[in-house]
Length: 138
Ligand code: 5GP
Ligand code: ZN
Image 1 (cartoon, rainbow, N blue to C red):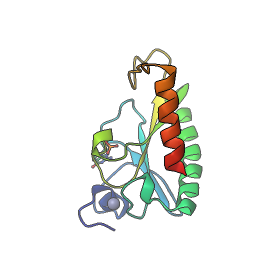
Image 2 (image 1 turned 60 degrees about the vertical axis):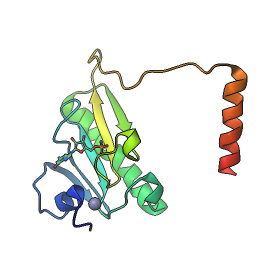
Image 3 (image 1 turned 90 degrees about the horizontal axis):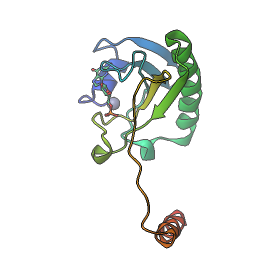
């Protein structure tokens, strides 16, 4: 529990939230400012800042929750699609520093566009970056 963390406070019941799931080490509740109604946040109960801090066994529990809650959100909202997203670090738009996954129900023609795509300068440019990433993986 991190005293300054809004999600720790929600999990601890100190701040009210529309809870939808509470099993094992994972908790889920509705986002207060939904992209679409039913937008849910799936969070580990223990405080970890980003994906890179999440222990693998907890990650497995989170995956189970993403599937259970994701299916339920789709059923309850009548959505035909679902986006799963995670922002890590401020430059990626992470505002709350307690790792969390967004489940966003989607409807055909709802007009949401998540990101703009670009082109590489050349195939060589793309291959060079792929090589750098392979090297970083080791
Ligand atoms: P991030 O940008 O960090 O990935 O997303 C944080 C999300 O938490 C935002 O979508 C925001 O609307 C949601 N959020 C922030 N504060 C609260 C809160 O007090 N209650 C709930 N239910 N959601 C919150
Ligand atoms: Zn926290």
